[in-house]
Length: 269
Image (tube, rainbow, N blue to C red):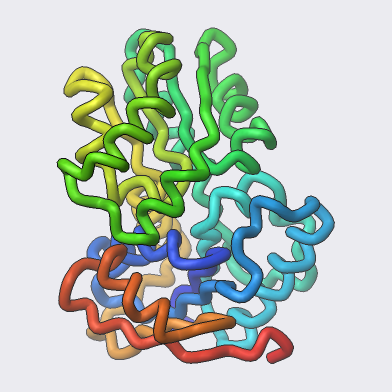
């Protein structure tokens, strides 16, 4: 059981920021990553469709004998709870719960901002769970679809004119609200965290959903006595379309020199 890999899935490549943190924080663990690139973006679909896609992704990973599944997708985490997944037989960790916990611990003035995809913001999941922790917390949120495209297209340099201007527009109402904590609720956004931090100022704490989720995985593995002790010997990346495009974008998310090579998975597989 301990030597089985961790499974990670996302609608595309954004979940690689979570995968990157996992590769660092649990260095012995093997990993299988699935990016459903043929059906991205998930955020434009109905909840019923999202449930179907999620069940398909989970089934694929469980057939590869994973010991734990990480939902590295804010849209799925917001809209598909574990009780809607058929035949789930392993621990299932979403990106929202550990992120909320970190944000509540970080805030001092109880004003928390959230940026994510429009589907995640529309679900209200971050706001609802923050209120469950502390009813006095105030929130302000914004859906930022253009940032996803800019990151995937490589507009990520700290001084990039276009990305800075788009970030300023998205962050203006959040900054005006006076937050001291900002949740990066989409796994694409840590890639441009320096730009976001520069705009928000050093007094605002950024909460990286991918990093917080990786920390939660580390804790769960230890609690359940599932930690692998042997050196890592398996990392596989699957996509459902255009693996060559994934390979190019992977360096943006995993860092230069990652040399990630994706395997094409038939959606019917």
